[in-house]
Each structure stands twice: as structure tokens, then as C-alpha cells.
Image (cartoon, rainbow, N blue to C red; front, side, top):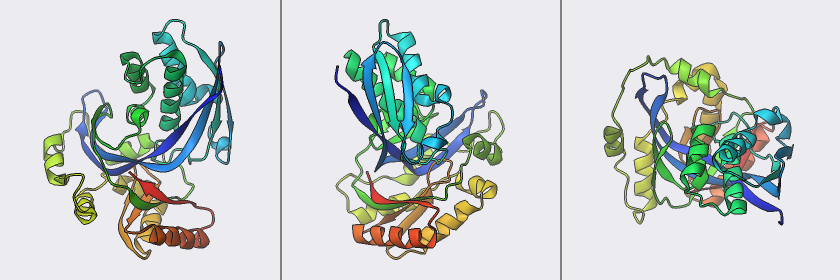
Length: 294
């Protein structure tokens, strides 16, 4: 079999509401999710043995191979599909890790897509879906990598059609542990803040053919409930947001996921590229990407 590849696109939480904390400790969420045009790339050379090698500018941040979500996802699918063809994975790591953009989850989802292709399994096969869910909360949404409303603990997905937004994404190269951010949020087991229906109503998401200005107004009504605790843990997140909000032509700036990556939306590609250029000059150690969300 020939070598196959998949791009593992960055996930961006345009909004993220924490609805409460379940009795089992998991948090219920409601999030509008889009995907960026920046990505890791995962290749697979089919074979009997399972392995993973990493390369690229962020390879040193991947940690132990045995702990990588690519390996975890492959093993979970292998447990569910008798005679599954596995193989040698190679990961070109471009996205920052522990960054709130689902880099590791996107890699795991790409692994599941590759294994499904090699083995002639539909991507919506219940065994693939279960393996995604058990690998991590963001893996199911990354499996399709399509804009959607994500609810529950990440497993309930309602596809949406977003236009392409010009954007800049910035990570200050500071890792933020998701578990620490949720701990700083301080919700008790069984504590309910708001219902998902109330959140959806408050967003009042326009139709796909609505003017972009109306879509941006809807996004502006949302927020990321993890932004404040993330800034408390890592004040540099606030600095990134301030830097993005100070750029010319910016319409909206917000943190993605549990941070530390933040994004800004612009009306025009030229404004986004110029903002990214200025930010990179001012902060050469930051990871900065100008592109699109959709």
C-alpha cells in the first residue's frame, strides 16, 4: 500500500460557555467551533506494527511517543476492529502544544481517518466514533473538522456553515494545562450555571447567507468562560489579547479553548497579514499565524 497523509487542522473555539459541572466531575460545555487553515501533517505507511516518529518545528514538544494521542487513538480502534491494519505514522508537528487549539486531538483524529481509509471503514462507523471519544474530549469534533456547535463534554456535534473569516492566531509559547484552568474556574460537582438552550438562544446565530457583519455581532455576544481563569494562571494571555485588540482592522479578539492561543477576526486578509507582521516584529518569540477560520 502507498503512503497516505492527512492534515490535522487547528480547532478554534469561537465561543465557549461552561454550563456546569456534572456529578462525575466532567464539565458540560457549549461551544461554536471553527477550524483554521494551519495544521500538522500526519502520514501513514500501512503495516502490521504500530509506530510513530515526529519531526517539524514543534516535535520536541510532543513528549514521549507512547503517550501521544496518535498512538492512543490507534490502539483504541485496534481493540474494536479485529485484524485492523496499522502501520508507521510520521507526524510533522507545526502547531504549538497545550495551546487550546486541539493540536494533539487533531493529530489523533487524523490517525483515525487514515486507519479508516486503509481498512475500508466509514469515518462515522460507531467503532471509530467510540475510539475518538475515548481518546479525548476534542477528538470527536476534530474527526470531521467541520464548523459546528459542540455540546456535552464534546461528543454532541451539530454542524454549522460559517463563512471564511480572515484571522490572526497567536500563542505566546506558554503551555496552559486544561485541567488547571478548569480547576481555577472553581465549579463544584453537580453545580449548574446555565442551560444549553439559553446559550443557543443568546447567540441567535444568523443564517449562513447573512451579512458577515451580522455573524460578527452574533460572535461578539458570546464569550469564553475559561478566559478569566486562564489569565489568572498565565497573565500573558491578557497581554496577547491586548496586543490583538490593538491591531488595525480587528473586529473581535478572544482566547480559544483553555488557552493560551488567542485569535482575532478581521474584515480583510490584508489587515490580518499586516497585524501578524507587526505582532511578529514586536514579539519574535510568539507563534503567529495569519490565515482563515471557517
